[in-house]
Image 1: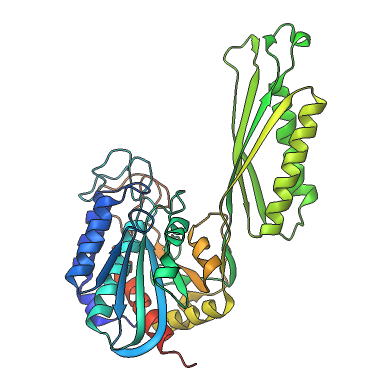
Image 2: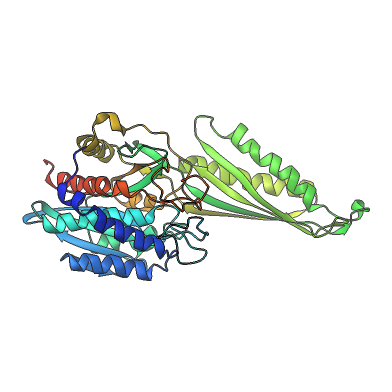
Length: 399
């Protein structure tokens, strides 16, 4: 493994920063302490700092000593999740109901390691922008930063992202050209019936049975309307209705999520859901309100930038440790908004199987969004090296 020696030497320093952030998790758009930590470290290393994009976002500017108009953006996310940590080791969350269960503390630390190196070794052309983004976990912080002028104020030729991936071995990377993560969308269907005594259902209009029939019918979109070669998920995750065993309620509410890799498939599913909900409820004498919210688009890697990243990864860990055709996931990522604006690539770095966790970890698996998760600090030198090599090679590539 070809790691940069200064970053290896800083391992414990960067790990302390990572664990400090882990112990003080902050939710979307509340990353005040975290952004202070990031900004103060960048300033300490002589890096120009800009704050406020997306509320708590931080952008560092690192200019090389070789004059060039070329620029590149490297992005890490900073926010935590609203969940209770099961771990009890020393750096476990000190904020009840908040936890870095997705590794954003590690993402921030890896990019800080790279920023420190680049600030001390400015032997590259052009400019590197290090982007520390708030509110990836459902808040759309990437879009907020873009709307606040991220790419207008800091013009970039391309932008790159990275996420740790449990189950992928430490020392390995995963990536694929095209879709790597799905779009994230939510729906709410409110079915209005007419309540009555459960022993006299003929006197009312039953929204419960309407919801049951609608739930079954909606799955025909996936099995009969969607092209079987286009991956998609339609999951009804909540049905809320009723308050007593002998009462037919007035209302039933259905909620859930839709995930796709293409906008065309998403358009189809939304249109058919609306039509099926309306016609099913009309057939059973109910009225319906249908809401569909598009949250994150699919994360689609650009082919040329993906090939470039693969070569960088291979130069660090060897060809055998780079999986360049990984199976995409139906999870979602708001880095998708950045890839809609600029060419770039989003990669996975292996977080291992959880055996790295200290005494005091929870009993559950070390998976994302799990109360027993912890980022693997062994990744810090590798992730930092990847960022540095990616930036330097991108800026020095031939015309």
